[in-house]
Length: 330
Image (tube, rainbow, N blue to C red; front, side, top):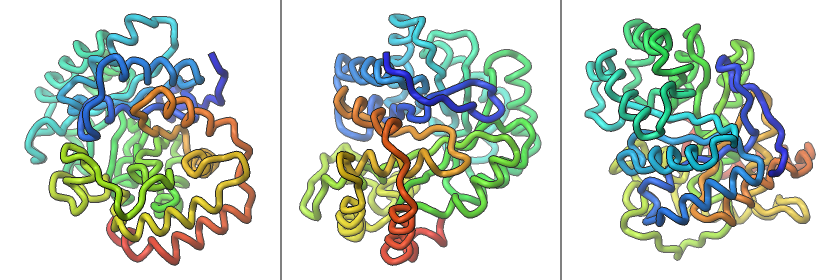
């Protein structure tokens, strides 16, 4: 197994690899992935030094959790920290975020993953008012006391939601969209998290693949891929798909970003390296649909830090091409 830099995941106190693995792809919404291919992705990631998996109870309605649970049974000594999420399997109403539901959701995730205590459970982009509810965070504290979960965090859509959650003393981590097309979290969220000792998990790191530089304006995604059916927020928050950037604009900006990749580095690796070196980031969680992709993502941890001239160029690209579309919304 490859050794990879480890960082403490906020108030969990647990070490995790700077490149983790997002497993939305192994459940649904990115086209079909066969079980043997999904397990090969997990295996390749771990062999490349990944010690952190991120999943959710809604990914494939539990399929992603179940696949990870099977993998944990097959490789019990791999030392994996698993973060899951809860809340998106019901109508998105604040009144559904109550202790009895939390217990039921946790019990289902524990069965799926085959564990007694969940390492980290995150509220899965709930209604904004949930982050301001004392009762919600009291209920989360109760789950910790009951040893259903070891720690809790939040996955957010907006910087405002992140800042509200960071102010809660029990919040261990915040998962937020961060990539070269989504720079707003650098302004307040990352500094606030670092000051509070809250971990930052960077999601949608490649802007749904845009930053890989592989797509053109003529690329067609399958009907069951959210990059087809959610481009304008038809199914869930638009920011989850291409980071909220208009596809045509994103393709053009991605071509410009690709030109910034250092010699020997891919555009995707460059984007991941950019995230890793942002102060306050704990782990970045790219997804992978193949073992090859998982290995390539993990390799970004070994790239040299990007020089200041490249960081400045990323900022310039964002300001010119992207900011007007996303900065005010998220």
